[in-house]
Length: 241
Image (cartoon, rainbow, N blue to C red; front, side, top):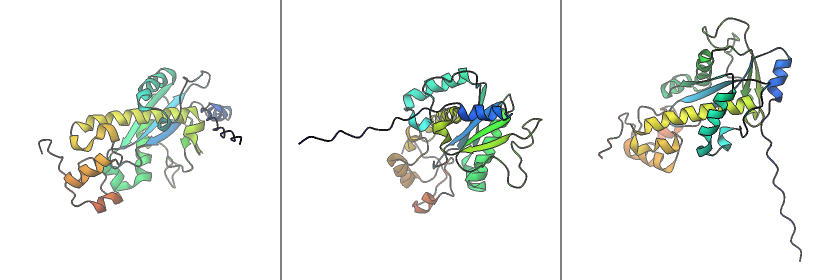
């Protein structure tokens, strides 16, 4: 009996500059991609990366959504993006801001902070996802009062943009590497929580530490997981215990 051939796996296409060049053709240059990391974490900030891209230069090989890049390769791609792009920045909203304002507003705050750090003002913005969390409801404001002079940038949302747009994939990479470095530094302050490995996301070690020590000062306290904790201490764990 002949065995049927195994089905071929679909080839995953790399992101390209088609959407960025389309925005430029429409008169919105320079163009930047925006993406977030840390939305689903229990501890640490939510971080938003912004990368302004040169559409007349080929991007470094291998740029893709940071979730698809092995951790040991992210730093090298981060450096490649830094050399290639026109400018980049990462903004953060801390756990207390996530609790106070909710995730949509926290993302907007982080994105505005990133935009304010850029040395150039993008005219066109490609935002990963279907929801424009960047534009303030009712006012159409982008970037607060310190985003610079000039017209308000146009925002285009792109579903699965981190898989199709180079600028968004690059933003995902710089945000991920920057936030991961922050969480590794926090790991020294809270050794029981293994933040250098889980980066504040749920993991067996993280859950066990929460059950034993309670919340740290960098945990988000309005998330539903808090309701299941035996107690909610705000003190950092004592490494000697």
